[in-house]
Length: 286
Ligand SMILES: NC(=O)c1ccc[n+]([C@@H]2O[C@H](COP(=O)([O-])OP(=O)(O)OC[C@H]3O[C@@H](n4cnc5c(N)ncnc54)[C@H](OP(=O)(O)O)[C@@H]3O)[C@@H](O)[C@H]2O)c1
Image (tube, rainbow, N blue to C red):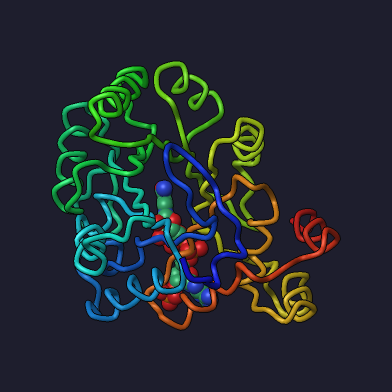
């Protein structure tokens, strides 16, 4: 395999897979409010193809992005998939319009969405199937996790992930099914899932921080992010990603963009090295 800019991010192993730790999130390739097709269809296809050229081999999506639009674009851009490219999808969110999301973890619905993702992505087995949210009050968690275990044992999916999960929920899930990854919101300014990151680090579970480049007030002119970015000759977005990568070898950021320029910039973050002092300063800046 030729060397790529992503190589410097290192790799993470789960199930039978080895992926580079800096991935790509395909939610932003849809229309406004994550609804409908993107304004620039060909541009979205080009971003996906360029991501793989740059070495990205871990792509995150969901049935609900569009809905279906993101998965369909991934298939159009990349099928037949190179052997090394791993696609992580999700199910468990109903969509009724732009910006409207409702949890639905009825096991029959989750199974239907697994079948439909197989069909849309054009594969016989999903690489990583993530339960999108764990807050459907109508379905006991044990039933949701039981369905995930069934899909795994039937070979419909190669591995299981949880999203927006607490340590308690992950622990319960692991008593029923092997959990390979957890995807929670986490970035320089939102550390509310710190305990989940610590748990994943100690258990060797992949931690996928979503909304990874949000830097909020840390990015203000004269703030620590801008200064450190200047020190290392990188952009604020790149330092935000480099900080995440430096936190733990189980962290797999999935920055999303519909712009080729931002894609190139984000992938180059794999090669941005922060000193321990810079990482600690950013960690304690919030
Ligand atoms: N599990 C969940 O509940 C959940 C929720 C949300 C997202 N996700 C996943 O996480 C992925 C990433 O999350 P996200 O898209 O919310 O957050 P993000 O990747 O941190 O931010 C994306 C936003 O930042 C902009 N951007 C990207 N690169 C940039 C750069 N280098 N400089 C300046 N702006 C830049 C993008 O706009 P441009 O298009 O203009 O670049 C977009 O508006 C999603 O694609 C999705 O796969 C999961």
